[in-house]
Amino acid sequence: MMNNSELVLQLHGLNDSLANRHMYFVLSLTVYMFTIFVNVILIATVCMEKMLHEPIYIFLCNLCFNGICGASSFYPKLLQDLLADSHIITYTGCLTQIFAVYCYVFCEFTSLTVMAYDRYVAICRPLQYHILMTPQRVAQMLLLTWCFSMLETVVGVILTARLPLCGQHVRKLYCTNWEVVKLSCNADIAINNVYGFVLMFSHLLQTILILLSYMHLVRASLRSHSDRRKFMQTCLPHLITLLIFTLSLMFDNLYSRYGSVHELMLRNLMSAEFLVVPPLVNPIIYGINLQHIRSGILHNLGLRPKALLTHT
Image (cartoon, rainbow, N blue to C red):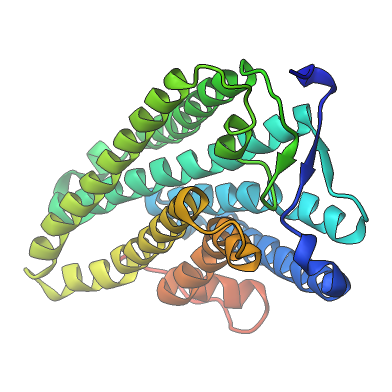
């Protein structure tokens, strides 16, 4: 058994990529910078355009900010390892990365749930929308999103940190809770497993609630042309975002447990997908599909004169 506080872990995810690491470094840095750019552009557009100071756009800003946090929990360490001969991380640094990654995951699920509720009220109960979605209520929902996500993450990290470790080889690009738990010295991990099932059930319930809300939204959107327009502009991107994130996360969890340990390249792609694709794709999907966002971005970039925005 090792002293966890003095332990240095070895990451093995890049072992097959060293021959082309400079090419991977340039590619990764480019994708990271572009991810930050598109998210910041969308957030800045919403902040500068007063007509976009509505709940759905505020929730979208929160989703983009969380995407920046998720990407930043992955890319800096990856870029450092691509330029280094040894890929090591301290145990404290590993736990910090676990906290950042899982806080991003939980906040993404909760943010998508909050956005689904907002669209449900906007389409199914339009006359009560401004009564239910007040600035105070929006602030409370954002605060709950982050507090709930951080609480989930802190509990999980504490349960992992209590385990004594007998290994130091993490066979992944970055630290994950499951990989660290596998290094424990035959310790009792029943509590970790139970907590994992509780989290899985709670977020599965969130996904079910979102899908149920969409059943009501589809029925409601058939009533009029304006409701169908609302659904296509705001709900369809939300549904695509949910599917991309859920499928990416599901593939990573399943492959990390049941996939072949010899297919390192495929394992790397699966493990990085939910940290790379959603933060990059989310602002692009919303920016292209939402006319108000698209017009604001083009205006701020000097590509289109400012037009009077009207809400749909």
